Image (cartoon, rainbow, N blue to C red; front, side, top):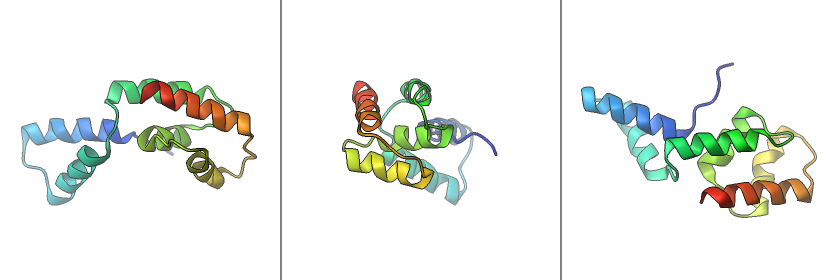
Length: 104
């Protein structure tokens, strides 16, 4: 399975492609979506993902989800972790919130 791509990187790729040619409708909609929802530049997003990956039970996919959404509340983090079927301790939630707060 290929590595997940953060939305900030998608925005950069589509912006570069749009400078070269007219994007197909689907790609233009994806670019519009990325421009609307990207909250960090691609370089900052990569740093955030790298830091999140150092935590236990945080794989590449979950790190990208956390970086794309930048949750602010513990319940939002628990919701993203719920699909992982991993017991999540309060200390882990607090640590994720601390890391995310550094990049806001």
